[in-house]
Length: 253
Ligand code: 6PG
Image (cartoon, rainbow, N blue to C red; front, side, top):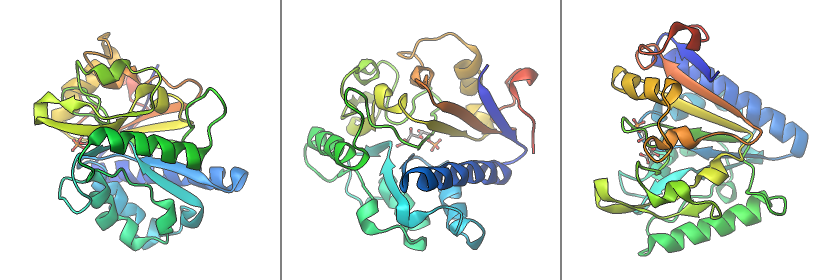
């Protein structure tokens, strides 16, 4: 039974997600002295990043012991309006004391997206120092979901969905006629926690298919997220959850 947490409206949803992220980060920093979080892109998490930058939440995350990564990035420079890093920099990074050396952006400005992907894998090795034979284990990975069921930059039908050894790849996305750089499912599925953030009526049909259907990960890449031993939590507002069966909703707040 998927763990779905439904909030009456987006602002309550982002408070629930921010509280969970703060708990994860605080526990990790207390246990290991460091916390590794991968932020997601798109428009949904902007409000969460802005919330984390407010006085109410700014002190809830141990920023000086937190390393930030991105679960995907567009093949653009960091100052592009399309940059997932750029969105987080404006909404969050400028407002919290995360050391610049703890911010690990994907170098979308490189002419060859594949080089950005391999450099990012190196950064994952060096920073997370994975156990031998295992992908790096993030304390939390934030993910969004598109209306076609994509997540990160794993789009339906992409060969990247079936990647089993690399942690970061740079698929060409036909839909945008552009490359992306994205985490792969083996890396995502190694995480201790994955938090999906889904809001709005437009996502209701795909969220129902994702949580109650039986399509393959090739058809609906978000269905490829099955954590090896971590916690997968779906955060949805009432509009996005409106097509779900009642037993899937853990309650609205
Ligand atoms: C990206 C994201 C992507 C996003 C979904 C949902 O780079 O666009 O990583 O996977 O999370 O497309 O986007 P919205 O939040 O804008 O609906």
